[in-house]
Length: 286
Image (cartoon, rainbow, N blue to C red):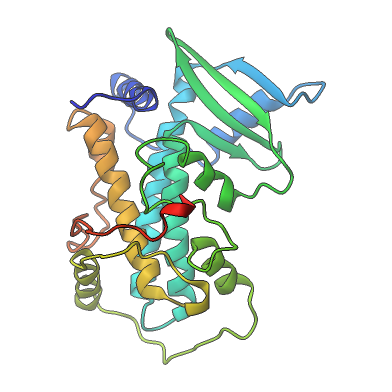
């Protein structure tokens, strides 16, 4: 077992809680948000509030993170399956695959953004006491930036060029590419619609998994739809999430072992990549 940093030790503790309680099913829709909104309801509206929280509720951050990673995997598969039929949706689904993965990392680290309550929630475990801190967020702080900023405060993501601050103003940026995909006019490209068969899907995923990188494939807004880069980086982030938990937990977590190989994935989705060899040109933006 590797030496764990404090945030990784917290992840290990919460997975152990799930296993000790024999929790295997994902909670009902909205469980974590509803619980946090309930805790966030108080008079006076201070900028910061700290409350104690039950371990079972803290563990919802972990189940939420795993479910968000599953969304990422599913969105990636949808992106690949639409590669020839819809550049628009292949691009959008590919972006959301990355975003869901980054959001999953943020939940693993113990963070959750409450939209209506306008709070960013973080959890701590100190001497066996579980607590939540509610911090009032700026009105302009968007989900598509806040989760990306959170994980850049922690290793190994702080120094990993596959994770940026998602700055919309950079030419090479997930955010800038998303803005083109979602909000620009006259981007349409409508090829003849045809559904990829499973063999074609597997060939594309295999190509992505065996692509050797010499630079970080950050999507470029001016190159929209830039689907190759969108899918490459989404796939690498998916693999990084899975490997990160494997390194922390080993094979000891029954809960993670249940979800890390989704039965609905094609055989080609083997979570393997060619190790990149590059010096990132994006180091200044980390």
